[in-house]
Image 1 (cartoon, one colour):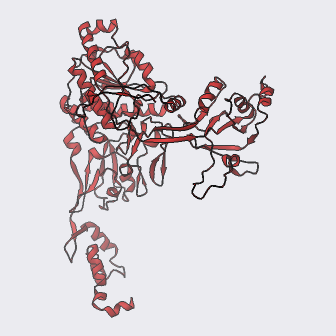
Image 2 (spheres, rainbow, N blue to C red):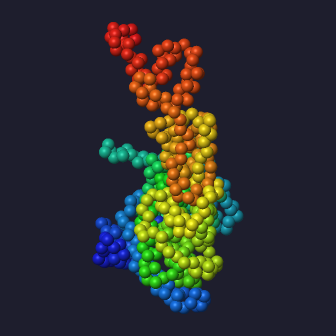
Image 3 (tube, rainbow, N blue to C red):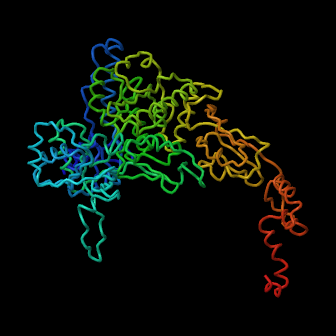
Amino acid sequence: MSQPKVGEWNPQDPDSLSVTFFPGELARLLLSRLTNKRPSHEVARAGVYVSTEQTLPNLAPNLASNLAHGAGAAEHNARARAYALQHTVKTDNLIPATVSYQSQGRLLLVGPEDRIRRVASLLPAGVKPTLLVTESVHDAEAADLEAIFDATASLAALTLREPSLTGYLGQFQLTGLNGQGERVNLAALCFPQKAAAVSEQPREPRFDLVADLGHAPLFALERPPVGYLYLADDTGLAERLAELCALTGIFDKPRYFRLDPEACAFTARGVPGCSRCLDVCPTDALKPINGRIQIDPHLCQGFGSCASACPTGAIAYHQPDANTSGDYLFRLLKHYREAGGDAPQLLIAGENEREWVEAELTALPANWLPVWVEESASLGIESWFAALTYGASAVRIALGDYAPASVRALVERELASATVLLAGAGLAADRIALFNGDAEMDESLYAQPVVALLEKPLKGDKRENLFAAFDALWQANEGSREPLAVPHGAPYGSVELKEADCTLCMGCVAVCPSRALHAVGHTPGLNFIEQDCIQCGMCEKACPEQAIVLVPRLQPVPEARRAVQSLKAEEAACCIRCGKPFAPASMIRRIQQKLAGHSHFQNEAAQRLLMCEECRVKDVFAALAADPVSQLKV
């Protein structure tokens, strides 16, 4: 691998480092070609923080832009942009956690026999595939049918019905029904295990690569796993097969995410809650297992939609992390202002959109600043609002044709929420939107005065950063004081409590993942903080009295949103022996009424209902403790 050129770096000044990297990592390139993702510009180096100098396209504003905004302003902005992009270094720790794939090149061809034999005849020399017939002949009249069967006569074809495929590069498993109706493992049939040494771990047989030529793909996913190739037609067969077969060896890719199970709101005590992440993953890398969300790092391809959808920050994008990205946005806009630029507009674009976005930028005014990320969805709503507080006049998110439909739908839902928050903060809805090159010549955005509202980048968690940015914008623009209606499913809102029905059993507190609902502590009572509520619905489902109702909304006034609200409080029942408060007095009265005629709760036993848990046990065993002989009768 080529070595990066590292300059002198002052840790107190991240932008003092200038690095040029000459990529040559074959494994990364092969993986990127197979997944249609361009290789990252950041490459791991041991022990240092490094970043590549940005390759700047010809971003000089065109003549129309100069005429519209004045040549002087355009020149100032062009110089400011070039300065900001060149002097703002990404301080990612480029030794990312990685996951490995190991492939020996065992290739499985699945589909109708004529198509899989045609593919087998085009494979590179030395590749010996396994042929699995799952469908009838695709084209019985094909002119080359006899030739391809003669060319592959040495390859036996197996037949299974109802095939099911799982796995990823180096770990594919296919099962299907044999002639007796039994579901069998194809790899186990094709590669019988040899006796392993005592010190060796037996390895389950598997296929490394799969080329699927069936009528319908075995992986019904927007983005199938690495190592799987679906060939709907015969266009460019030889080239595509050569790329697939080149995936032989050991390959590493970044572990794109960080998962905090304790912050996850998926379920608690068997009560179902939030499932936003499950609905937006295009690779099916997320699955609920034993009541917890698990992410398979080998299936994850780093789209970032799960992190953007997660309301608690339990899933966080880690390549780079949110605070590192926020710090870069802050310094980029700061450098642009210091260089004399006006009204900067951020354009967030993934590496897959780079070619398209660079072409669009050449036709736009010079106050557009590109922010290149691994995937456009990896920067969520908290980053968009933070950028506005850092001094951006507008934020645009570029989604190209490559973006999966689930990712696009997520971004559009987040934009719908952003529109509500912008309105509440007293800002126009078009301050944050999808990028549309044909519609980005509106002078009203360029003319808006822009002021940086924060002197330092935000360093909290996801929700803290979002509301800190919103509050700064709200105060600066004297935003609305009335609660705002939010889109369906948005993670903002309050709860209504039917006080007469609530018994203060605290079932809602036990399942609340964010402590929006919590006990008073010293006396029986239920408190609520609206800013922490993510509307997961677990409290509503856990309440045995159905006394809680969710109220989707956004309270724009910071003090009201952060305030501790008392939903219910009442007198405590104090222990008749030690005086400790131990339960709501109303609950004890109801219990006494219901057990008044019960034979097991008479005389001394009835008095124990008025004791705390410790004194109740002591009272039961007091007689036994005073008379040791009576213990023998127990």
